[in-house]
Length: 169
Image 1 (cartoon, rainbow, N blue to C red):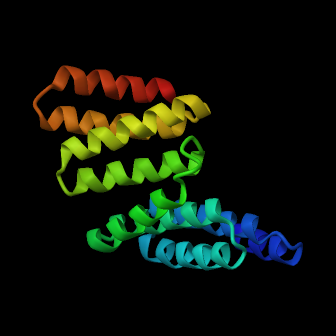
Image 2: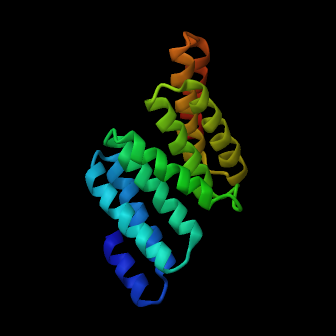
């Protein structure tokens, strides 16, 4: 399991990689509607990343925590976490962690019905995902844009975006 992997990585003196393994567990739980567990794993990943002074791992863990809070409809704490996450990636604008943080920010804006912000963050995530060749990020950001288009009544664009997301995967 990823939990066991993180323990093994700690024993090998690789706390940053251990933090990323815990953040991956948080992501899986968020995707599978286990947001309460995800919240705990994300916090553990963040604490470990801070202790190891790994800014990228800390940023990724914060984004996972924000996603978990979003899934729990805890929007204020999610907003605080995603802002901190994006701040950690200022110098690494085209990293996968930064693109993921932009995606979570887009999903949070979507949940708050701020479609303009959601479209903007999703566009940033799509640009980064294209540079990184990360189709899963591009597809999820495309889904955010499709929802925004549908809410605006532009069903043709929404359908085109949905088809694009399907092709990306």
